[in-house]
Image (cartoon, rainbow, N blue to C red; front, side, top):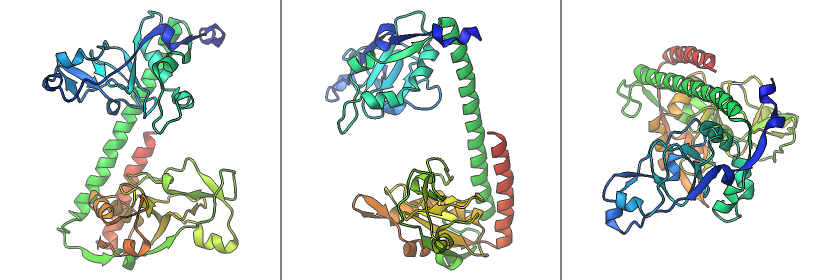
Amino acid sequence: MKIFNKNEWKKVKLGDICEVVTGSTPLKKIKEYWDKNEVPFITPPELKYEGINYITPSIFVSKIGSNQGRIIPKNSICVCCIGSLGKLGILKEDAITNQQINSLILKNENVDLLYLYFYLKTIKNNLESIATSTTVKIINKSSFEKIEINLPSLEIQKKLSKKLELLENNIQLRKSQLNSLNELSKSLFSRMFGDIKTNDKNWEIKKLGEVVQTQYGTSKKATSVVGEFPILRMNNITYSGEMDYKDLKYIELSDREKEIFLLKKGELLFNRTNSKELVGKTGLFNLDIPMAFAGYLIRIKPSNLIHSKFLLFFMNSEFMKKLLYNKAKNIVGMANINAKELEDFSIILPPIELQNKFAERIEKIEKLSFNFY
């Protein structure tokens, strides 16, 4: 349609359509600046990469303290320009910010606030490229003001932002529904198997090594070039236990290596080496596509005494995550749990028939989850 003819769009600099204000932090040693919760003080943790973020402040200063900075009016956009580049949010009320944030105060009535917000969400890579090369990446006010954006007519901006707002709202609704289903799954695990910390249902206790087999992954070098087999690495397992099959690398394997390092559906992967809080991430391989696994991972192959879905929920329980965190040993900035240590953990062992019932119910919940995408 002619209304979306990009030939009619123009390039403008942020400094031409907005006043850019860099924040500052009132001195912490002056008590009267911080003794009253009167004016919001915005810092990067309140900013986000995802969604439409109407900022909810968690820190406040007194009116006297706010005079040490510049009051940014509501309906301005705050963008992190030191550290977590590109995190942003929209002010719901007047506020001040710290020095990591550049705020955009609209000074052109022909710019739609949400259009500008959505556009700024797309420029993270641009921010990375223009940041000064220091330990902490920084974009100064002058560089930020010179960033160019594509600006159509106000009519088109409003049409685009309305469509994007509807899309973001739908995404947030789906996320909320999926979170509810995830909580339902956790609740089902607790109802069927009780408190696994106290074993209040008096299930049999086994060492993990008695009911599974473990094996380290390959140390063979992978490449980003498409090869014979995708290889799963520690970044392919989320902290909450889902498999993320994006950002794959590839590897060539001999016939013997195929037998050793190719996963089968229903096997689990345990992240044995990572930062301390991420050691122990455990995911369930659920594809029919042959994939290998890398050396920082341990394959867990369940026996016929334990269902893979039951084991997945056990390994990702809050109780087990705490045990793994406490067990992980720091080695040169990284933490590690080896296969022997993993096998020595105790696990409750309800009857396999009950585990199977749990798995069947989880699969029904997963089908509902799939329908939400």
